[in-house]
Image (cartoon, rainbow, N blue to C red; front, side, top):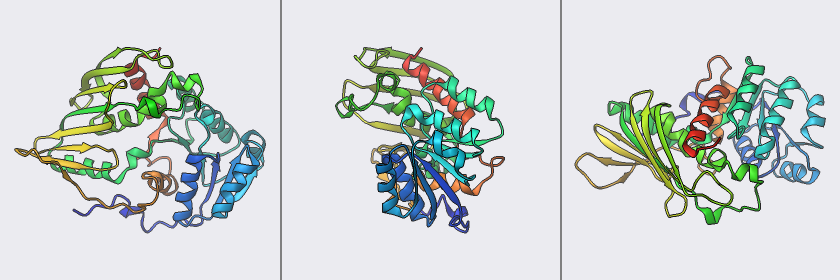
Length: 329
């Protein structure tokens, strides 16, 4: 089966676009790699640390600024795209600073904020700016192929998903307590957003939380069910104390599909028990999936037509749903 999600962008010239990345850590490096692979050379890295900014620029030949976004943003020209790739707690402050200094096309790394009220406030204050939250998994090529296959089957009939976390892989010393206590939004939200992007946001949701962790008081086992706005029934089950992994299973009248792992796609045909891997095209196989797609969409489309990425309004809805699933106050 042939499928190319970026086919309509192949003829778009992005090479002369100007891009600013705020941050110089792991995620910023992934964006820098993506931009370099796309042939975009007019890139500026802005970091608080001179060492990290120069180190990243030395790899890709980009321009370097350091000293903090509050100091540098006022002296920079307007860019075609600003990517906010700072630590979670500074994502929104950096985005606000960029907006206050005339930047209007901004991609904020997920989740944007741990609190929907902060995202809502930003949306209300800058209603005419083109700000999107970088849920890169919603731009996976296999994810869009799954959407197409489900449509060809006549639509999704039901869905189940899991967002089990591997507790022994979480470095509790790396994150402040404010992030750990809302880990569902900081991390598990990536799976939850994929499921509800496929079936529609819940109109009925009955969540249950069980257990507790020293750093995550609201629970460690999460089960629930509901009906989406598209009248699709769904359920979820995640036990952080046990084994498992992230995954989504979608049912149609013709087939069942699995995103397990999320980067792949499997199908089980009716009256069969065999799961077969579904092939799909990946434009940049050596780059974190979804990053090139997000950048292309941010640069190719204007704010009035770009419905393919997560707006501030939609990110508010994602956060609200996740808060309910995890029982956050």
